[in-house]
Structure formats: C-alpha cells, structure tokens
Image (cartoon, rainbow, N blue to C red; front, side, top):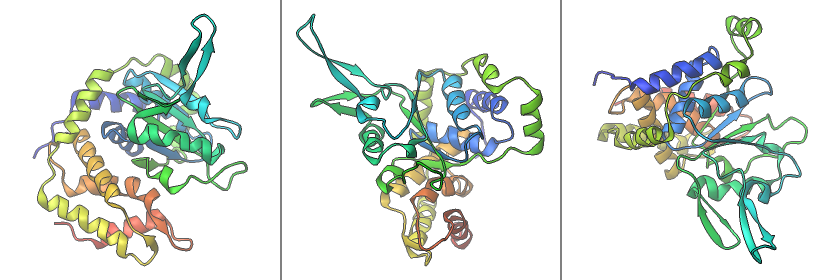
Amino acid sequence: MSPHPVPELSAALAALSTIILGKERPLRLALSCLLARGHLLIEDLPGVGKTTLALALARVFGLHFQRLQFTSDLLPADILGMSVFEAATGGFRFHPGPVFSEVVLADEINRASPKTQSALLEAMEERQVTADGTTRALPDPFFVIATRNPDAQIGTYPLPESQLDRFLMRLSLGYPAAAAERALLVEPERRDLLAALPPVLDAARLRALQAEVQAVRTAPALIDYLLALVQATREHPALRHGLSPRAGLALKRAAQAWALLEGRRGVIPEDLQAVFTAVAGHRLSVADDADPARVAAEILARVAVP
C-alpha cells in the first residue's frame, strides 16, 4: 500500500504552510477535517493565527467565506437570517444569514449565549436551516470553523457537550517556534500574502475528494482496533464516560481522510493514531482535573495495535 499523494492536496498543504508557519501537523488535521466533511474547533489564546487559518483554508479551496464575530448580544437571527416584510410584494421575503456560506468562521464562539450557540446545531448536523417553518439547504461543501478562547477568560460561556460533539476535531496552534516567529516579524504581513494566494482547488474538486474519502478502505482488523480504542475510553478510570458510537464513526471518517491526505487508499493504524486525540479529546468527560490529551495518549499506549 505504497503512498500516492493527491497532487492538489499536496499543493494545498504547501500553500497553507506559506501562511501558517511551522504548523504542519495542525494544518494536516484541519485539511483532514475538511475532507471528512466535518467541522473544526480551534481552541487557543488570541493572536496565534486561528482566524488566519480559517481565511487561508477558504482561500486555498476557492470557497465563499463569511465571518461571524460572536458576542454576548448576538441573536440566532443574526446567524440564520430572517424574513422581512416587503411592501412592494405584500409578503415576507427570507434574507439568508451568514450561515449560508461554504466556509463559516464562528469567531470566539464561546462569547455568545448558549441560545445563540445552539442556532448552529441544526446547520452543523443536518446541513440545513429551518426558519419560519421552512427548511432550506445549506451550500455543499459546508464547513464551520469555530474559534474558542480559554474558558477562564472574562466574558466567555462554556460550550455544551451537544455543541462540542458537532465538531469532528478540536486542535490548537500554540506559539510558533523561534524561527517561524522571526519570519513573521521580518516577512510581509500574513494577510497581505493571503490576499495574493491563488486558489489551488475549487468546490467541485473538493466535493470529489470528499467522496474519495468515503471510498478509502478500512479493513476488519482496523475496525477491531478502532472499537478497542473506543472501549478503552469507556473503561478508563479518569473518565466519567467514554466515546459514543457517533464518536467512533467520526474516528473512522477522520482516519480515512488522513489516509487520503497521506496518499493511501486504505487506512492503517498510524492514521487512526494521528487523528485520535483531535477527534476524541473534546468528547472525553474527564474526572477531577485530568487532562484529556494525556488520557488519550495513555489509551493509545495501552491498546495493542493489530
């Protein structure tokens, strides 16, 4: 099963790497999330490149982008849209909200109230919006990237578990390495470079690649390994409860996307290991002050690879 990388995906990764410096693994995870038709939660301190990454993904894939700045006074209608009476026609006309975009950046999502956060639930899960009794389909592809500041910061609300579960992956960028941070200071602004970045793919090609992800083979032994990892989360003493069957499906889909990004048409255990923490970490309900990332690493170390 020798790797044969998809040229467009290699080019997309290279283009993203010119904008987000020294973060190849987070970039691969973000690309895998998009290929798997998931949604991405980026949790980190302000100023480390969360919004820039969202802009770069939309730019590289040639997708229509809308940014929503979540604040305490944001209303669900500000996200979904609303019907407005028009005197000329004597009726109401629906004006779509920013959610009707191919890439939606929910910036600082945990600064909005839980009611407003929940407005995204149907959109993220069903890829449709119901307003005024009418259901409207969202674009395809449809990709939500949410950024979240640490909950300890002033003016933030915790994300409910049902909302967290809608995100296929959670990742952090962290501080850049010294060489990358120096390059940020001496090179042109990233936003200027981003504006000049040409699209590498388009929406039609992305849809085709997303379909290819579903065709990536998962052997029975790989499924057994995945099930063993899921079962280990349900038995770990530091966890209140383990991963759900839906989380298992998310793991499989993310591993398939990672395999395709690596140029393989079949999933190997290393693909599952590569995405495990990003997919499982925010779904693990830890007891006391346990670290979900540390628990995920322990599970990977304990479960035997077939």
